[in-house]
Length: 461
Ligand code: ASP
Figure 1 (cartoon, helix red, strand yellow):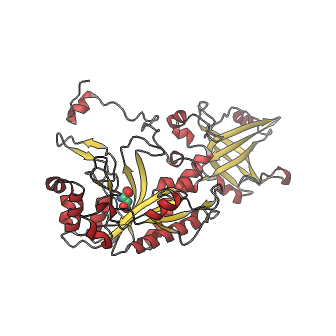
Figure 2 (cartoon, protein in one colour):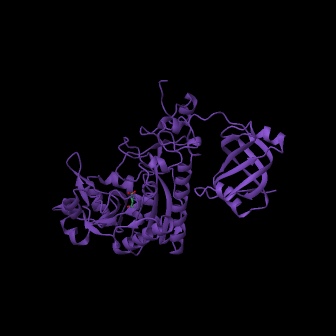
Figure 3 (cartoon, rainbow, N blue to C red):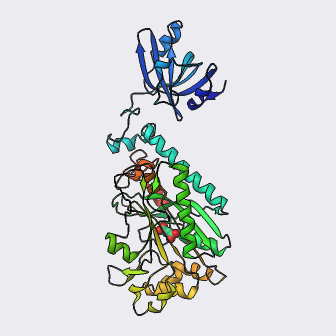
């Protein structure tokens, strides 16, 4: 007989079914034993009755987290024994056969309770157990709903999903890059992408017109606040668009997402309020305004747009650095000030803010070689450096690059806010600690000397 998911058993009253899962709890009540069986879809109460002595004895051996397969009949529970809190609370199964598929040691923490209060190092070391807890499963299921929603929504609007390389060359998003030594090319390195920025722009040059990717991004930052060395963005890019086109597409996508995956939430104002960077800073003292009316309401979603970011900011060395990244299109009204007053030049770049968190940044991009080269020069890059790092972009712009723009909402943060969680680690299956370690895998780890030698890494170990 085929295995049934627990959530499907409620519709099978009177039938004999097979369920599989983990023993969530066992209760011995006089002559009968109950277990709550758990699978990904929920909990089911299973009764072992005294008439089958052998089976009852078998059930009394069960301990939490044993893995079992049980065959039995689904019965309606008597009215007074129904549990309205459970989706399967009006039924129970009377067991006829029990197979123990695997035993389990006592877990280092209770997975039938919320694990938030458990020491995080231990939660992460035993992440596979932490993920058995109801809240963590709910969060991962929500995350899947969000990414599935984006895939369907964008596909219906003729976007196509394209994977871009993980082993690549740097793209500047303002952070240090992770490096991967090349074994075949001694002394050379790949870097892990901070974002697919250059590839998505090149896909526009290729004529793919509308691209998206659920993209893993890597940034080697000293761990400030709630950051992860690797995180996920909904990266998207479109050709022949204005800033207004990108904003309205993304705004509608977010409104539809909230309706589809979190209908209990209300959005503070639609259309989303818009502020210039300057207005936001003047009015809210921040470029991440929290526009919610009631900041204590977990079901209020305050989206807003911040526009007109400056193109440049002062670098710590006193020169200019890109306020976002160097591919943003300067506002044509300000292009005349590029040489004289570059710090006053606004870019066609925008942020989507949710409840005071930056959810996404994006921009209309430069698609002309001359202008892009000028921006690199204003950023203090020498010609040979420009050629070496970005020659391929400049060259591509000479082969019929269409005007284009896009953005990249952060999936981790979005799911965190949707799930009312306090940090992004709660919505990532296998996150790193605050200091970028994975206690479960033991990463980062030392490498055998022979591997280092093969990768041409000198070592004094
Ligand atoms: N690549 C940018 C980032 O990661 C987003 C974008 O401009 O589309 O911040």
